[in-house]
Structure formats: C-alpha cells, structure tokens
Image 1 (cartoon, rainbow, N blue to C red):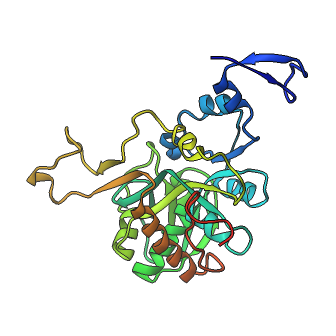
Image 2 (tube, rainbow, N blue to C red; image 1 turned 135 degrees about the vertical axis):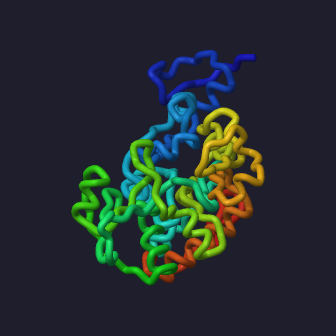
Image 3 (cartoon, rainbow, N blue to C red; image 1 turned 90 degrees about the vertical axis):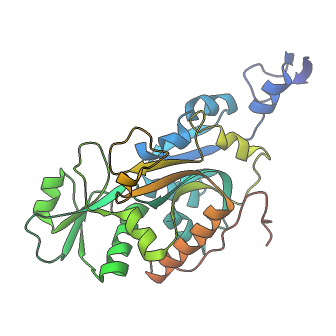
Length: 296
C-alpha cells in the first residue's frame, strides 16, 4: 500500500509524492547521533551498525570510551555505548536512562584484559597502560587495591608490552592476539573480589524523547544470532559448552551479551565499588528507558 504525503524536509521540496509507509516511519524519525567506542571488543554489539544507521538515518560516531561518554554528557549524542564509569560520572549532571538491549558483562576468566608483571619484579610500585581512562583499566586498579592492597603509581604510556614493562613494574592492557597469556585476569579477579560479574558496556541515552522502538532498533545493531553468552576457557577443547573431568582445574568464564535483570543487579554492585574507590562522585540509581519516568 502507498500513501500520499507532503514532504517538507527532503530534497523533493513540497510536492505531494507517493511513499511506502515504512519509508515514512524511518525517514521521519528525529535525528539521532550514537557514540560507539572504537574498540574491537565491542564489535558483537555493533556489527550491523552501518546498515541500521543508514536505514534510520542515524549518525554514528566512533571514538574513545572517554570521548563517547563526553559526547553524551554534553548533548552532542543522544545515545552512547557506555561503561559503568561513564554512567556514574554523570550522576549529578544528567539523569540517564539505560536502553535494555544488548550489553557486555564478564563473569570469571574471560581474557578481556590483564595485568602483566615485569620478569624482574620485586615490588609493584608502578603500572603502565595506554588506556588509562577506560573502565576496564580502572577496574584492574580496583582489583589490585581490593585483593592485594596494592596502590601503584599510574603511568600513561604507549608501546609494546616489553616497552611498557621497561617503564613500570607492571602493565594493564586490553587483551589482543599478540599478547602472551597473563596470570592476572581482571574479570576473574573482579568476580573473586566482589562475588558478582562485571558489566563493561551497555546502551545509555539522555532523558529525552526517543522512538518507542529504540530498544529493538539498538538490538538490531548486534551481530546476527548473537548468543546470550559465550563460554571462555584457558585451554583448547573441541566443545567449549561442555567440560570433562580432565578440565576441572582449568580457568573458565562467560562473556554475557544481553541486558537482563541480573545485569542491573551487577551494575548496582559495580557502581558501589566505583563510589567506594572515589571514581564517581555519588551513587546513581540504575534507571531503565521505558520503565522509569523521566520525572522521578
């Protein structure tokens, strides 16, 4: 079925034209800018972003994790893929809402990020990282303080792992294929320290009017057939979904890809830790788009 509409905002001028209703729905949606961290770890949540952004005329900005939080905070983006740190830092400035679509949380050993130690280590007085403002790096510093009462001096540095360890006693890095295995896995140590999984990224919006179906639209950014979670192991095995007794002593974990009621509980605990370690100014409430009124 086709309908006749009067177009005012497109290059067609003011002439009556025939358009498909679905085209009208997508093209008349208010302009929306979405900020996404330029980190390949988040790719499962945004693999189809270009196609969906074109369909709905969204603007996509890729930037550092810190910059994405800044864009949302300063109203230069309506939606951002954000960490607990970015969400908590804005507590006294913007009344954010979480879009309950996809998310990334870690549980146990995940090989997401690790602390590496100098071979000649005697004491840990310093730690180097090129991503010092990223939440996962701050989480690593929290783990060192909580579990080992270690409070090293932070050094912002770039370079290879060997170059970082030449400048500091230890290095804190997002994992990548060229890096060797590390003994201190941040998400594994977080679970051990706080007895709760750790949310790493989720979709956040300002308390403005957004399309009612924005949760479904954001969900469609993700890779096709994205699972609820992925099992992670520190050993080679044919079936990651099952273990035999011979693997019982190996490190295992999960990377969760969906926002659930449990994720909300995990975020509450994570915000508690960030506040306790004075990384956020106050404890924000976890508010959900479509559930919590903007007038509360």
